[in-house]
Each structure stands twice: as C-alpha cells, then as structure tokens.
Length: 544
View 1: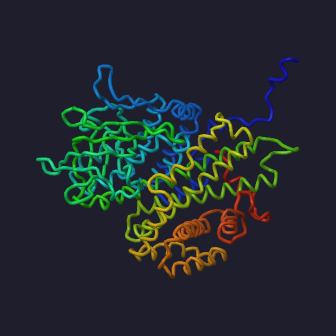
View 2 (view 1 turned 60 degrees about the horizontal axis):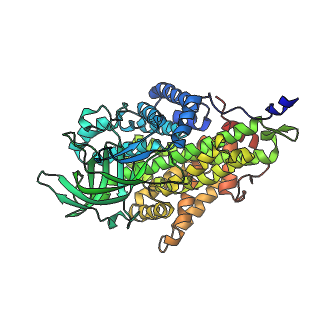
View 3 (view 1 turned 180 degrees about the vertical axis):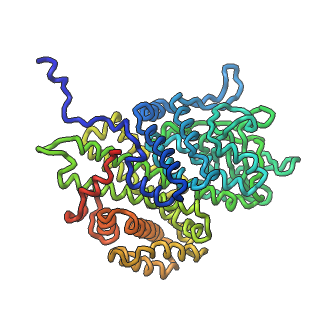
C-alpha cells in the first residue's frame, strides 16, 4: 500500500517527439501559399527536418540547459591579459550550430529564401529564443553591408554560410561568421542621433578609430559588429571586427553582461571602445540611412519570434487540455476552456499569417511590396509583439499550477514574451515610425489599402473596420497622441484581411467577430459562443 501514492494519473505526456513545422497548420499553409511551386517540395522537406529536430526531446533539453546555464564573462586570462571572452554552455553552441546549418542566416542567398527562413526561424524560436538573436543580427547585417559593394563581397558569403565556426580568429580564415550590433548608448536609447561614440579617421581610406561606449551590444561573441558613431560629417555606420586580419584582438572591452528577465541563454553586453579599429559602411554622416534596412529586417524577426513563442505557448496549452480530465471529461471539451483555447489559437494564427506575408514581400522585392513593408512592418512589430505576453500568461494558466512550475517550460515562455516588444524599438518608436511612413511616403498607404482591399466584400465586419480606418486616416494632423491606436488598427485590419482570404471560415469568422466586430471581451475566452470554436482549437492542436 505504501507505494500506491507514487502512481501518476491524469497527467499529459510531454510534448516532444513531434514535427513542430508539420504540426502547425497555419504555418505550413503560409509556406505553401507564398513559395513558388518548384521550390515547395524541397522547402517542405527542409522545414520538416528542422521541425523534427526542434520537437525532439534531446534538442528541447538543450534549450532548457542553455537557459539554466547562462553565459559567463571572462575579462582577463590567468596572467592578467585582457581577453574579453564569453563562455557558453555546450548546449548553446549545439543550438547555434543547428540554426546556422538550417539556413537561418542564408535568406539572401537563395530563391524564396525569406519565406523559407521565416518559417524556420518561427520553428526554431520554439526551442530557444536566445540563440535566435545572433541568427537575426547576422541575417539583418546583409542589407547594410550591401551599401558598400566591396564589404558585401568580402563578408556576405561568410554571413550567409551554413557553417558555424565558434573560434575567435580572423574572419578571412573562417568558413562562416556571425554578426552582432551596437547602436544604443546610455544617454540615448532609441535616440541614436544622440550617440557620443567618436570616430576619428585613420590614414587608410575608410578606416577609423572609435572611442566610446555602447549600453547594449548584442551577441558580443560575434565575429563582427555594426556600430553607429559620430564621424566628422555626422552619425555614421561602421564595421568593427572582433579579430583583426593579422590575428590580434581588436579593442573590444566587455564591461559586463546584462542580467535580463528572460533571454537568459543569450549574452547581451555593455562594451567600451578605445582606439578600436573600424571600417566605414556607407557614406559618412548617413548612418541611419545605412542601417534602415537592417532595422526593418530585425523588426520582422521580432514579429516572427513573437509568433513562434505564441505558437509554442498555444501548442502546450492545447496539448495539456487534450489529455487532462476534469469533471467527467477532457478539459479541451469543456465549453469555457474551449473558448479560451480558441481565442489563443486565433491570436497565434493571425500572427503567423501576417509574419509570413511580410516575409514573402521581401522575396518579391517589387516596388509595391517594398511600399507595403514600410508601414506594415512597424505596425506588425508594434501589435504582434505586444500580444505575445498576454498569450503566454493565459496559456500558462491553462495548465493551472503546473504552468507556474519551471519544468513545464511555460515560465520560460512568459519571461521571454515581452522581449520582442522592447528590443529593436519599443511600442512608441514603432507607432511613430508608422506615422512617419504615412506622412512621408503616400505610396506606402496606397500599397496597404490595396492589400487589405483584396478581401473587401467578403466579411461585413472587415468592411466596417476598413471604413473606420479610412476615417481615422483622413486627418493625420495632431495624430501623435493616437499613434498607438492607429498602429493597432492597421495591424488588425491587415490580419483580418489575410485570414478572410486564406484561413478556414471558422477561423476568419471568429477573428472578425472578436477583433474587428467588437463581439469579444478584453480577456481571452470571451468569444461569441455561437462560433465553431471546436474546429478552431482542433486546427491549432499540435498533432502531425
């Protein structure tokens, strides 16, 4: 009898041993929709392989280990020499190596590369979001480097390589390289024009010595960094290599690693420059213009990252409820819990659908698509990243007390969930960027209205939301105080249009009712009871 208390009943099995990509119906549908047919079979095979890797018990354990054993800074060696190195748990290197080999920095090097990478990035985020930071920075550095054809020819093959080389040595001796970036400073934050780091020209054309600090330098173990500093002609972008061509270490003093709420596996740092060698990227005094495409790429990755976190949170919640029995039946079949899960599933599918549509615009690269990205990216970054935290918290609640225990994995998702809203420009920055796009680039609004207009007439609630949005857009004078509301409406209408066109009717119906028609509450689980919620939940269930 003594052993009877050790029996375990009514507990779900771990959500492992499955294909994260194939089990995500919204994601697989988006890939099929946006890729050319001749690329589709290869892309599906590639993404399914990454999905199986991501869903394996071993790789999920690596994600947990990398966060349980965060990086450690070593400023000096045993003899007192300054080395400024960051030590990572072996799991971190395994994860980063798999992310690189999966092509998550190679979007610019192959057809359909942005859609394929976006889907892979969304899948890989569900293992560990921290290692996605250097993958994102490396990916985003490419358009900035392309402002200098010589630099692009030298560095782009390394950055788009599928070889992970962790050793600190001259980049020209490596088969693959990673990039970080250092933009913000203590006094400026998002106001990079207030930067004080100074760039003094050296004898060799295009080279400078940097002196100053960076309050937030991402991925300090990288091979190179894009940095903003004040040159004689104004704010300028520079490439700072970690190791110089002769094998000596560049002056790159890591003062400390940030102690962050989440994102524990990833190293974020404060660094000092003191005569640090750098090469100019783009024109002197045109630093913001040089990095603008890089910023847009990292902001889209914030959308993808949040979509990935939401998908994993929703998958865990539905998986738990599909096995858990309460009051004589499965928890997933109880009307109120079904409402909560369906509401969460709507948010996840809307985020995924929007993120992949924006990735497809990068692959198209036509004038119309570039114009759409101008306001759609900051609007999506504003809204999708803000929805991530409430989704993660509600999903944890679906597991009850188990969701508050580290072993469930939900606490790590909750801690990670605010990050993408804060990094790469917080909410106000995104909302104001939307305004700038509307006021300075009328073609951006035209492109947006043409996109959402493709669904006009298919749902009366979407039609009403478009009409209300046009009324709000009619007067942009003095609109700064309403910028958040406008960014939210732009994102929601675009999501509604995409779901009406592409999602199953029950998903589009529920989204338009709750998000556009006003027939939903402020909390999750307040959808109209008359909707086909069982089908919405079943679509989101992680069963391959």
